[in-house]
Length: 88
Image 1 (spheres, rainbow, N blue to C red):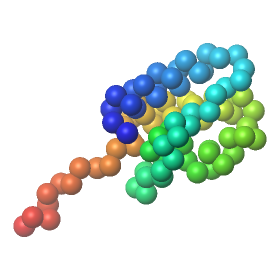
Image 2 (image 1 turned 90 degrees about the vertical axis):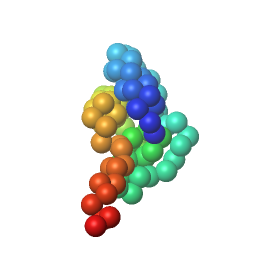
Image 3 (image 1 turned 120 degrees about the horizontal axis):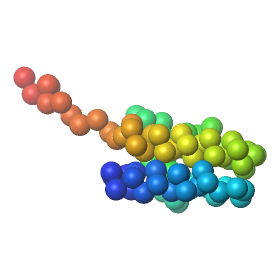
Image 4 (image 1 turned 30 degrees about the horizontal axis):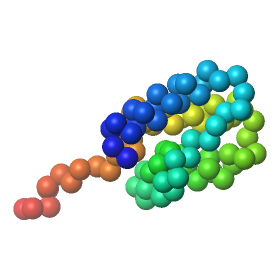
């Protein structure tokens, strides 16, 4: 995921929060878990959020979308850049 994709996902999350019902899945068919963040690289959900999605009510799904928005805007999905401290 890059900054543009994260911003698009955050904007989609805001739009979904306004839907009265039938909250869509955030899945983007990029189903890889980042080992450092614990988030899916495509939708920024956790494994429990992905596994529980089909059983959630719309309000809980909106909560997951809100978490996705916050994660996307905070940039916590990014892999930290190497600091170069190991070059000594």
